[in-house]
Image 1: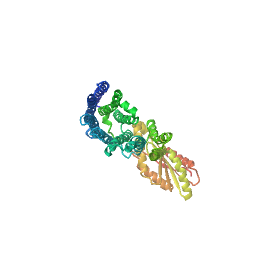
Image 2: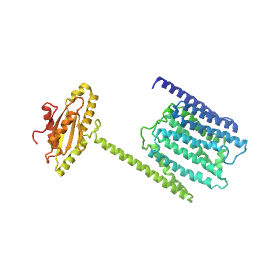
Image 3: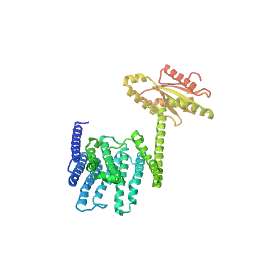
Image 4: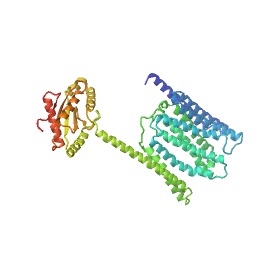
Length: 492
C-alpha cells in the first residue's frame, strides 16, 4: 500500500469516526429533547439528511463505477427522512390522517431504492445465478413471508373498513420489508469482500426490519400496544431504531472498506456456517410452528397458507440439499483426480500407474496383443539441480514431461513414478516400436538433457510387478553402459 493510500485510509477513518461520534451524540440528545412534535420531527430529519449527506460524501471517494449503489442508498434514506416532515405537515397542517397520506410515497420509497442499491452491489460482487445463495435467500424470505402473511398482510386484507388504496398502502410496508430481507440475505450470501462496510450496511438494513417489525407487534397487541405507543420514552426509543439505521448507512459509506464492497467474487461458495444454518433452520420451522400455535388455540384459520408455505419451504430445502450433494460429489471427484495426478507435472502419478498397468495387461491377454513398458530416468538430474537450483529442476521436469507426452499416441500412458523417474505404457507395441517411441522421446528432451531408459515387452505370463522389474533391470543396464541410451533386459 502506498503512502498516498495510507493517507486516504486515515482520512476516511477520521471522517467516519467524526460522523459516528456526532450522530451518537445526536441520538443520545434525542432522548432528552422537549416532547414536542416539531422538535422531534426536526431532530429526526436532521439525522436522516445528515446520514444521506454522509453517504454521498463516502460515495464520492469511490471509483465512478462503484458509486451508483450508494446513490440509491442515499436517495432511499433522504426520501424516508423527508417523509417524516411530510407526515407532520400532513397531520398538523393539512389534517390528512387517512391512508394513504402524502407521506407514504416518501416512506415507501426507501424499499425499492435500497433494493436497487443492493441489487447493483450483488451484481458487482457475485453472479445472480449463484444457486445456493438464491435458495438461501428464498428459504429465509419464504419463512418470514409466511409469518408476515398470517399476522400482517391477511388481517389487513380482511379489514373491510379500509379502502382499496389504504389496503394497498398497508400491505406495501410488509412487502417492502420482505423485499429488503431477501436482498439483504442475498447480499450477505454473496462471495465478495467481507469488509466492515458490508456489516455496517447489514446492520442498517437489520435495524430497519427490527423497527418495522416492532410497529407490527405493537399493532397486534391492541390496547397494550396503543398504550406503549403513547408512552413518550418508549415511542422515542422505537423511533431511534430508524435513526440508528440512517446513521449506519452513513457509517457504511464512509468506511474505507467501502472501496472493496463492489469487488467481484473469485469463486462461489456453498458453505453453510453455523449462523446461516441456524437462520435457515428457524425459517424452515416457521410453518410447523404456526400450525402448532393455531392447533393449540383450537382454530386452524390459515391452513391453506401454511400448506403452501410448508410445500415451498420443503422444495427449497430439498433444492439446497441437492446443491450441497452435487458440491460434495464434485469435490470428491477433484480429490480422486488429485490423488491420481502428479502435482508438479500434471501427469498420472504412481498410484494411477499401479491401477492402470494390471488392467492393460488383462486387456492385452484377452486380445492376444503385445504390451511394452519402459522406465525413463533423466540423466544427472541431481547435478542439474545442484547447478541451477531446485526451481530450475522443477521446470525441467515439467518441460520434459510435456515434450514426451506430445510424442505419444492417445492409447499410450506416461506417468511420473517418483523423483526424476517416469514410466511409459505402450499397448500393442513390440520391442521395435517401443524402441522407436523412446528414441523419439529422447530427441525432444529439453534443455540439452538426456535420459536413460529400460524397455521390457510383456511375455504374456508375467505379472505387472515382474514386467516392471525387468524394465528396471534394463534401466540400470542403460546407466551402466554410459547413460543417454535405451536398453532391454538381457533375457526375457
